[in-house]
Length: 423
Image (cartoon, rainbow, N blue to C red; front, top):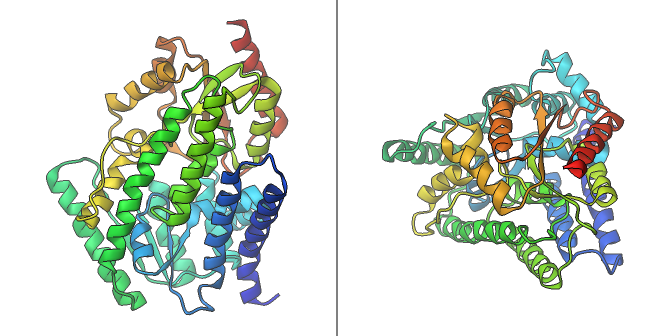
């Protein structure tokens, strides 16, 4: 296999998996149309990445919570690094090889596994080589350091976007100036100029997109809840990969309409619905199928994920596109609980979610590689216990299945469901 073939192999496999699922969904009259749109969106995203260099495009790899709206406005092909590691684990099951390669680089298990796997994948040459690396300190220190390593491995230039920890007029201006510097860097390295009209259009769609997220969140409050457990990952990746893009809007509008129709008919994602869960942090990628299966077996549905799907209330102004990109960074759900001081707002949001979504229990997926989230386990558990919501904490890893076996996690969840049944 040539180096070029090796780089394209993993991305090609993700594309094939998405296309197979798309065809299966199209052939199944009972499959939601939103599923077809979602997997087509994924396959199109990775096809653009796969073909980028052959078409003379500039690839910018970037870490999570990075404003890829700017890349789309400049006709630069984005590669979301952590999500690409997730997708390799979800669709290919090949995480052992890339994690082992990351270990050979000296990355210990305590470092976030998506970043260890990412470094391993680049060191093995199984991902397209980026022309530039973009990273920031939002949300974590793993992210802040990962960009330097990826830049070194690929011998490409990079730009670090510094996010202030607090929100004030001065700090907002500082972030805008950081974005301006990044745009100048990209224009110089890529030869592509910022299209400000295009960015304004993307901001307008992003404003609508966040409203769609909120509408979907309101529909999930229904009893029974219409949103399937697998939908959590889909909501995350829509914004991670395609913020403000027409395909993201099409998916979210279709999903909203499907959920609204289910609520109108009194249908739930599982039948009968027995337990309504709050999900804290992200379940392991390799357990997504198990979570869906257990949901139907035990009548369990995740109705809310406060740390990832609850967007802050605010509006974006297309006439001020760069300021709006900066504002969006403060609106993302993860920022409230993972970046800067943990305020009362995040704790109150847990209580509000427990009440508004009629939550029976919560599962905290304590990802050992994420020091930010694990530091909040006791705080969140104490707050939820005050409103009589029991919390199950499961130590795990997002992509590494050697930390906990599927059988062990299934056993813990089944015991928790028994506890909920006895209440």
